[in-house]
Length: 110
Length: 109
Image (cartoon, rainbow over all chains, first blue to last red; front, side, top):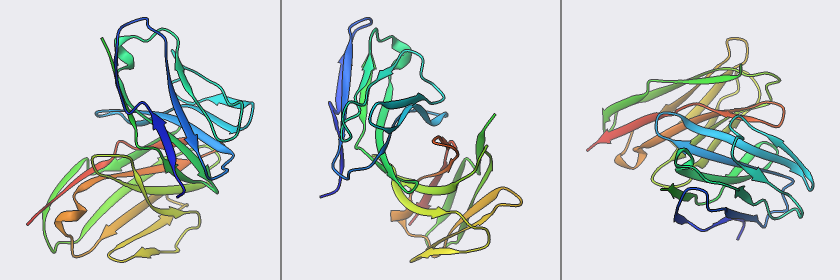
């Protein structure tokens, strides 16, 4: 089954404790992206990757890092999470502009 | 600055009504406009529009794009309670996707 998976689905952590949210797709898509969704602000793009080893900033990259060492995986790294990064995070992969979203990760930073 | 604006922000209708959702945009290097439906989970794809004036249809849903006036509409006819959701409009530019804040639709039985 074609899908995008994310882990963990839910995470509660404390300020400053490094964390990684994994994202994997099995559709061989070159383009992958991370979004955060906040009430009243909609989906905002954090980072995207056009292919292996090629990444670029979206609209809200501050406080986040990404890497794309292989085509199927695109982890999101929060080196020192802060409460303003509490949000719902979606990973997506894309082919011909059509995006397929993962199930989401709800992150709470205390 | 790139932006996508959706209207109305929210809408309450009764089953059987027809609704029109609006999406206007200003995005550099426009490539496509996409509509998604989001219930209490990840957005699910509805339509992708790249050319002006060509209507896309799927059952009771249809959408059209006007690249001259920079907007799109999503129509839902004979609404059902299962259509209750947030409808998102997104525009892809060069490698980036810009989303609107969505229209929350509630369909009453």
